[in-house]
Structures are given as C-alpha cells and as structure tokens.
Image 1: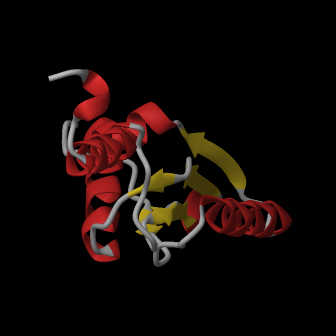
Image 2: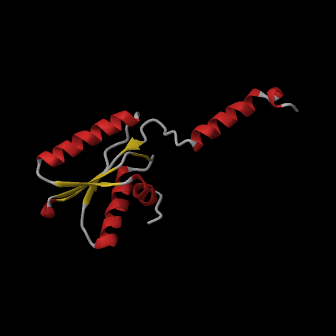
Image 3: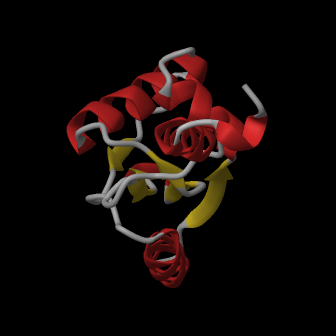
Length: 122
C-alpha cells in the first residue's frame, strides 16, 4: 500500500504520537515549585515542567531530594498547574522577584534534575 493511500486514522495516530513524543503538555500541567528554608534565607525555584501529579506528591519528592542529598530541610510548594507554559513562566518570575525582595538567596533547580525528581529517578 503506497504511503499516500493510508487511512486517515493512521495519520491521526501518528500525529498524536508525535505530539506526545515532543513533550506537549495537557491543559493545566505546566508548573514550577518553590522550596524555602526560612532559617537560612534560602529559596530554590525549579525550572518550568509539565506534570499532572498532585502538588502534595511533587512537594514530598522535592523535599526528600534535598533532605537525602545534603540534609537540607526545605519546605516546597508547587502551585496548581497552568494551562499555558507562558503563564507558568510569568508566575515563576513573580515568585523569584518576591523572594529576592524578601532578601532570600535564590537558586535554580535545573530541568534535568527536575525531570529526575519528578520521574522518581533520584
């Protein structure tokens, strides 16, 4: 069967698979998390990532990562997901600016580490 004669549903399946492989997030899945250690005036803000997981589960994973990595006790908050990546980025920027205004040292948790933590690899 020539390529152009394939049924339309095959093309639809290919499109769905290509979108999934490209990392397209479902509505409400774009998010970031903020970890705070008030005693040391430290804040960690993650890169933007897509995850449908509950905020509480994500928060526990990030807290466990820092506790296990170097014994630091950070309390994480992961706001609800945003429909649009840009919305999440704008909220992340607002959080960053607020923490800086409060005098906290702000560091970033890079996308590769976030993916490992959210995926449960670390």
